[in-house]
Length: 267
Ligand SMILES: *[C@@H]1O[C@H](CO)[C@@H](O)[C@H](O)[C@H]1NC(C)=O
Ligand SMILES: *[C@@H]1O[C@H](CO)[C@@H](O)[C@H](O)[C@H]1NC(C)=O
Ligand SMILES: *[C@@H]1O[C@H](CO)[C@@H](O)[C@H](O)[C@H]1NC(C)=O
Image (cartoon, rainbow, N blue to C red):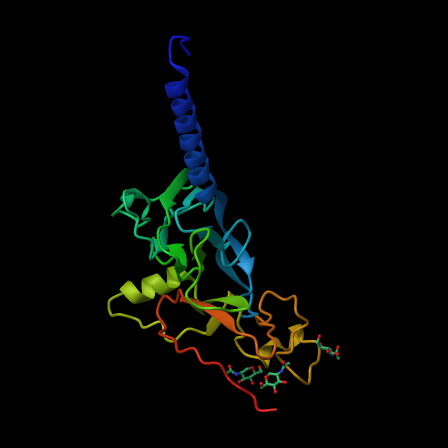
């Protein structure tokens, strides 16, 4: 700094400098980049207690939940560990302003990520809400490639309603036939209808036939009472009387159109 500057303008310059610094730090703290490293891979799983194969992310089915705040940047470094097919992920409901290439639609916004390749999805989330993501190549949504994406209101902002707790429900449909077999059926001439799904899943869990699944139950006389740690054990939502809960619901079904109802058992 030159010594010829008069002390008054120097003082103003210092104030401006600190003012800008505080604003920049404020922005940096308020919006973050959230990094994720994902590997997409087929794996053995029993979503409805019947052994099968699902498309998982980092060994999880459904894929990991992404949670972010309005203004955040999501950066997902995705490696395709499938040996014989490409993959893309579509971020359902995210508007992708200025990042159309991150929309994840095969052959429209990008070429598929080939086996062994890595692609980084980087995009901003600009609206609070409950979203989901899913594979958008071939029948990959039916293969179980999906998960939740939750965007909270910006730091310092309030939700328009009050609640003491929240639950996230990801609903999906599940067939015992492989997605490849489903695809051949649906595109064959004459057309072969694949029928209704064998099971409906909540957060990737369902029961196909309680009688068949007695072997995972702790009592043979009361089927579908699970010990609690099976892959298909029901999702239990623990609630307390007189409290208000928010249910975040997203349907990633590939075919079924669902109604969700909450049963009330009278005491
Ligand atoms: C469920 O399994 C039991 C026992 O094998 C069988 O008797 C019953 O018909 C099955 N129900 C359905 C809907 O598949
Ligand atoms: C079955 O599991 C339930 C819930 O964990 C438990 O209360 C019950 O005692 C168990 N029954 C048997 C026979 O193990
Ligand atoms: C819930 O509210 C009802 C009605 O106001 C009341 O009778 C009951 O005691 C409350 N229960 C608990 C656990 O607070």
